[in-house]
Amino acid sequence: MNTEFDDLYKQVILDHNKSPRNFGVLQEYSHHAEGHNPLCGDEVNITLVLKDGVIEDLKFAGTGCAISKASASIMTTMVKGKTVEEAKELFDEFHEIVTKDPDAEIAADEVGKLVVFSGVREYPSRIKCASLPWHTLLNAINNEEAKAITV
Ligand code: ZN
Image (cartoon, rainbow, N blue to C red; front, side, top):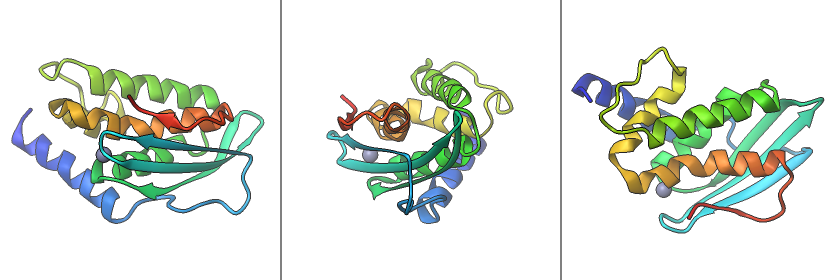
């Protein structure tokens, strides 16, 4: 990874950590889930309005490290207004990026905002922080009662 890219990645993470998008709890929602990452202590709570297969609105709340918070914030901006199918495709792409060989090249335009998480590959213990919001989102979509726990 080059330094310029590393800086970009850090900037995006820090920005979303400082000013998280879609932060809070929706007053009225159709779906909800909670997630916990015991390794780091990250907690995330997602509320969303799912109508006719479209994620019309969603918010996240919780406490956690900069990576989990930034990941949740970026995730909400990406899946808002998308269909459940599209959200699941994004999750697959996200998962592929963070688990890819750290030496593998990822084109910046290949996956849009998700590319910032390619930096997480360098820190394997942080992969769970970054993936927690996505697992919790899927549980919310499926109206899963059990907490999403990354192990
Ligand atoms: Zn964390």
